[in-house]
Length: 344
Image 1 (tube, rainbow, N blue to C red):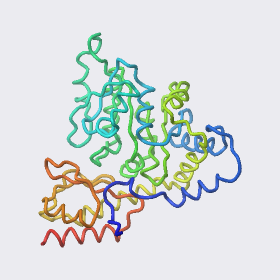
Image 2 (tube, one colour):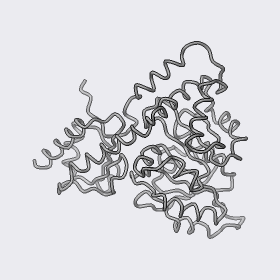
Image 3 (tube, helix red, strand yellow):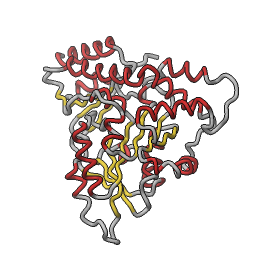
Image 4 (cartoon, rainbow, N blue to C red):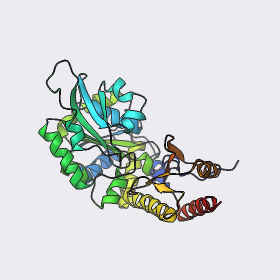
């Protein structure tokens, strides 16, 4: 069977070799279960070194759980989460935020993936009205589902609106490393320092097997979170295998090196198709996602050879994703075939 090269998702790629080696190393002998082990202790301390010494750190299996449990720590059943209409929590988590966090989602238009302070303020008209759901959380994705990145100034502006209105600030960071690489800043600079309350720090898209971290930047949330995680069925018995993955990603800033590579491969792809009349980029390429409109004939011909997503069929928009494992040769071959098929 021929395996088509993939530009479909950074989830398609396997585990970073260093991650697998780290998991193998901690497989030697017994260790206390449920996170009371030295591997988890070290991973938590290292993440505190990146986000802040007082933050709560909790490892879970997947991104949906990380987002939902993080939101659950912030909302009550009569409260709502303001998010982009295309946010992962709104369109790709099968209603899990509503079902498990018991939170209504107030989706706002975000043409470039970014929620604006103005859009948040438009949702606040019935605050205090007992007949209306009460907005409580603003949730953004960094990077966004459109591959764009909130600047530090944009994050500060959003945080100011959040605080002025007594809201809480949640960040879906499944590609947080890519955002840090794009901005050239620390993880704390775009989370803790701007006033985010809860962030999910994605490992799986960055080379982990099944490991995400919920980082509670407001330390007061940490006391209840062990119960939220357990009731949410995300407390790993053999926690050291999740923790070891983060130790591997953090060692020598591997998470950042991998993210820089993924972003560079996206820039290489975008540069390679620049000037082609048949390929119209729809968003600035700021991280590791490229969005473009292609003629149907060209798209189908490419999909016969490569895997990638039809993102918005109403306008023939596709998504191309690069990852820590994408090679220059793969990008160059893809670009070559796009150019050849476009000429044909």
